[in-house]
Length: 426
Image: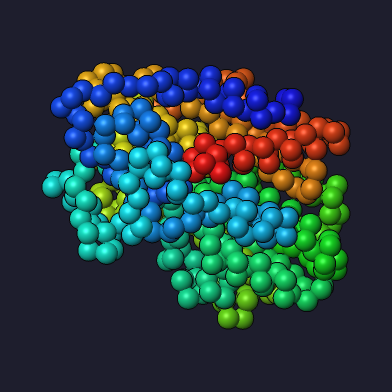
C-alpha cells in the first residue's frame, strides 16, 4: 500500500460518494420542511452543512450545546504536547453563514409521534426529519467501581473536553519512573485505533520529559486495529516502554478503585497505577435511547442505504452511535455518513429516489513525530447491509522505510486540516 496522499484520500472519498455533492431541487411543497440535526461533530455538522447546500429552501437547525467543538481525533496529539488545545477546536460561524440555524442547548427528549425535540432550555423544536449524531456515552455500570465520580480521578478522556485536559495535567504531574496504566474495552467502541495511538504519543511525551516512565495497556481483547503496525512502531521508537496485555494474558479489568488508582483483573491480579486512564465500554449517546432508536446492544441499527433508523421512521442516525459494521466508529466514517443522510433526505423531499449509497473511511494514526500508519476502506450498501469492497482499501505495510512513515504522518495532518475545513470551515 502506498502512503495515501491528501489528493488520493479526497479522490477516494469522491469516488465512493460522488453523487453526494450534486445539487438537488426541492419540491415547492417541501420548501417549508424542517430538519433538526442533533450533534455538531463530524457526522451532525456535516449533515447540516450538506443538507443546506443541497436543499437551500429547507429549514436546517443544528442543536449542539458547545459553542466550540473539540475533536477526539488529534486529541492524543494534545496529550503529547504536539498541539495546543485550541488547535483541535472548531466554531460554527461558517455553518451559520451557510444558512444553518444554530441552537446551543442539549437535546433532552424526543417525541417521535408528535415529531418534536425538547431541549435543555425548555424550547421545543418541531421537525419533519430528525438526524441524530450524539456520539457515545459511557456505560457507567460496566466496570465495578467506575462511574462519573471515579472518572474525575481516573479520566477516560474519550470525549474531547475537560476529561482530556485533566488527563494531560495528570501526565504532566506524574513522577518520572511512574506507570501510566490504560484500560481498553472490547469492541465496539469509538475510534478502534485510538487507545494504541494514545499509548504511542504518551510514550513520546515520556521520552522527552519522563524517560524512566512505563506504560501498561490492559486490553479486554486479543486483537486490535493495526496491531502489528502499532507494535512494530512502539518497539522502534520506544523500546520496552510500552507493555500490552490482551485478554488471554489476563488483560481484562473487572474492578476499579479510582481513589487508590488500583485495578483488579479477571484472575485477581491487582495493578497499581501512577496515572490511570480507564476507557469503559460505550453505547450511543443518551438522546438516541430517548428517541427509541437504539436496540438491546445500546447502539442504533440503521438502513444501510440511507442511515434512517430501522426502528423509527423519519429519524436518521450517523456517526459513532450507529451499527454500521464493517465501517468503524471514526470521524471520517461519520463525515461520509452525514453526506449520505443529507443526500437521502434532500432526495426524499424532492420526490426522488435516494442516490446509490457508497462510503469510504481512512484512519491515520501517529506513533511519533514523522512516523504515521493508516488503514483505509471503501464500502457500499448491498441488500440492506453495508459491505466492504474487496481490495479497495488496505493498511500500511510492515517494515516500511522512514520516508514512507514520514509521508503517512504528513498525510494524516493534511487529512485533519481538510476534513475540518469541509465540516466547520477550519
